[in-house]
Length: 114
Image (cartoon, rainbow, N blue to C red):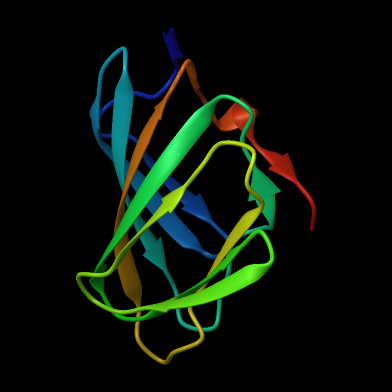
């Protein structure tokens, strides 16, 4: 198992930011802040699964060929190899927790399609 994340790291992205709040050999937990009108890239992961829980706001998740609208306290499981994208189509900031589990936990495990 390989985990490249470091606890406390805050990373800014065009869609918002993520912060690593816990990490060990087997899993990583992050908070994701998605700004209004922004979205992540359409992507897959070869080595990890992700679990997202919405703690604030509303989001839209494109997962393979389906779309899901999630609100506070809703959650979704992203199986490794699944194409997924996270969008905040609202006017308020959305915050999620993300738990990653897998053999390789690293930002290099992202294949982007857009």
